[in-house]
Length: 363
Image (cartoon, rainbow, N blue to C red; front, side, top):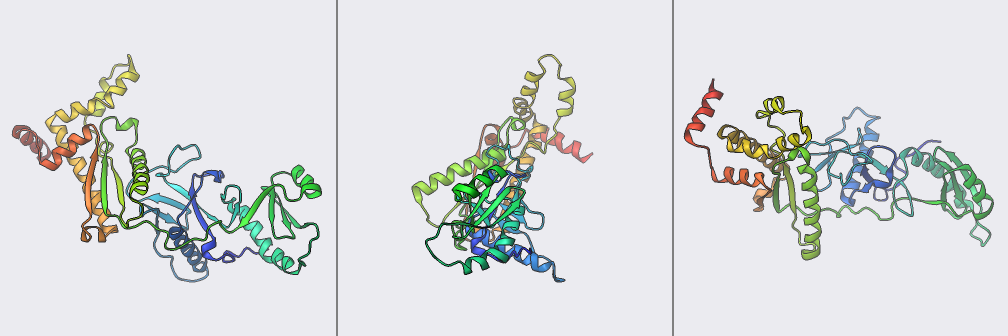
C-alpha cells in the first residue's frame, strides 16, 4: 500500500531530535514553532522531488542555536563543533543529533515509534482501516479485531472501535487476540498536543559568553555552558515568568586551538607517574604558559578572536539585537577570568617581551 506523507495536518505531526540509533525513548520533541516549520520544509522537500526546483535553506531551530537538515535528517549546532549524539551520551542535548518525524506515538510515553514502522501502519490505516471504520455500526457489541498487520516490531491490531495496539511478539499477539484484546502498547495517530506556531522563545535581550579556565582537555565548556543555560532558564522562568526577554549563553573555547609548546612538553615528560604528569601538563601548565609573555599574547589573541567570531556570527543571525539595546556579559572561570580581564582592560606583557614576540612573527 502507498504511504501518503500528507495524510496528517502539519500541526498534528510532531518532530523530535535525539541520539542516533533505534532507541527513541530518549528523543525530545521540538516546540510547536519549530515542528511546524520542519514539517513545512519536509513537505516542500517531498514536492521538490517531482519538480525542477531546488530545496531552500536549512531550518534554524531550538532557540536559533541549531540548524536542521531535512534531507540528511540531522540537527547541528551553529556556534560550536560537536560529535553526533549517541544513546549513551549523558546530558548531551548540545550535541549533533538526528531528526525523526513523528506521526504515530506510544500513548504511555508519547514517544514516536520508528519511522519505518510508522509508515507501514499509516499506509494500511489510511488506505483500508479508515474506510472500514466508516462502515462499522455504533452498537454495544463486543470490540473485535478489524485487521492485523505483521511488522518488524511485532504485530499491530486495528480494533473496530478505532483503537490501535502494538504487540512486540507473536505469543503476546496470539494471547491478546483471543482473550484480552485491548492490552498491549496503545498507539495514537498524531501527537497529544497540537503544534502552535506561536510556541516559540522570545528574542534574545542578553548574550553571555561562558569562558573556561584550566583543564579544558578534561572537560567540555560546551557541556558546562549547556548546563548553565538550563539552570538559568529554569530560574528565570520561576522568578520572572514570561516577560518577552531571554538570556542566551555561548561557550568560548579558546584553549583547544592553541598548540603552544605542547609537543616539546610531551617529549620531555617522564614515563614515571605518567597519568599524574599528564594531568599537570593539561591543567596547571596553562597557568605557566600564561606567565610567559610570548604565550600570554597567543592565549589573549585566541580568546579575542573566538569571542569576536562568536559575536559577529550572532549579530549576523540576530540583526535586531544591537538595535534593541541588547546586553553582553562574560561569565569566566579560573584562568579564563584572568584572560578575559586582561583583554578587556588592554593589559599586555612588558615592552621588551612584546617587541620580541613581534620580531619572531615578522621574520
